[in-house]
Image (cartoon, rainbow, N blue to C red; front, top):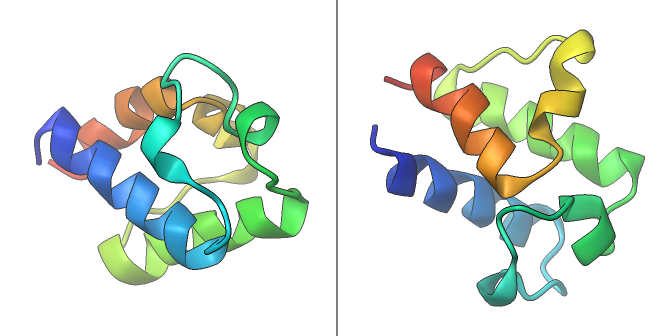
Length: 81
């Protein structure tokens, strides 16, 4: 999966978890929680959807690596290759 495909996967999941959020203007270098109205339950839902849809396990100690869209891509791309 390319970095762009991984980015689309993450944004699609965010859209499903938080349908009221506009993901079209997300700055990939800024914390997703700072840009979008995501609470800790939304974040857990995102992690669960990654596991359910793409069989990607994200241990809780790695959650900080999913802070920005760029860091999500860097962390997930090797796991989704």
